[in-house]
Length: 411
Image (cartoon, rainbow, N blue to C red; front, side, top):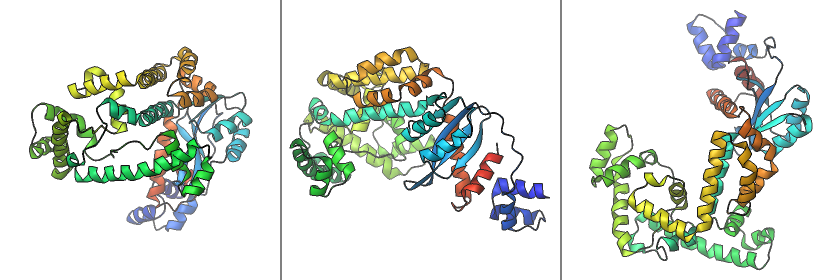
């Protein structure tokens, strides 16, 4: 019976296990189920050779823990109550036989592994490398937005051709420009960031964004229910279907669950954009769309996007070089071309991806291992998703001991 109680507690937690137990004529309280989790099972942990380590959120943005996964057995080994380097270092010192540690590019974990296991091979997570490369290229596009608007004819914006939502964004852009000019003037005069914060009352993050040129985008888009269907919509639009209701019906037949209003607004924006292009209103796409456009294959673009692609590349050769470098880095990660890493770093340091390249050079051994070793942190990320499910199943009230008992006992 104790084994049955423990298995129900591992699978369901306290209250759900009690509800099911009573249906099975097992009259056990929720507290008894939870107490059964405190009885440790026999330790089946074999000698560890390769582990993955990553942080997980107790409360996002406020408190974090650490999850450690056995990459060979595909099981969680331990949960640590925080992500402090000292805590991770102490745990690693108790397992000196570990030879491979897969991690993200968290500097705290890298230092803890280097101090506790100096001979271990550290492997940077490949997914995070690709994500960081995409973010670096998007930052380069954001910094180049004034020049991009000029390249595509975007010297001024005609408010008469904007929708109500776009007018609000444009007005917000004008307000941001006032703050941007004030911050840039102070920065150009040699004032440090901390003093600019005190004088303007703005946050450190905002001041840094202005100095880096990250607040120059006029129209910013957000993810919506329509985002995965945009390629299908553009094909229908190019094929001659210009009626919003008909577009919505076609998407519904393909599985779209959004409202007619969303599709109708998209169709209205498309019609206004087509009327605006010959008139030279100067409205350029947002930075995220331009970044996606520049990293797409030319043969997959429609005629208008292909013309924009050519104009941007011709006007900003440095951005075109950054795009080529980003593509080459993605190919290196996908195909494990370790030998190409050092030449790429030398070339990228003098480009618009220089900051990204310098950060890779600081962690060069782990990045090189990611291109040559078969290990990665993907399964650790999957275990964190499972941990989140267990935490939410218990309404976020479970302690680390309960979470550890459930996630380590269930393969």
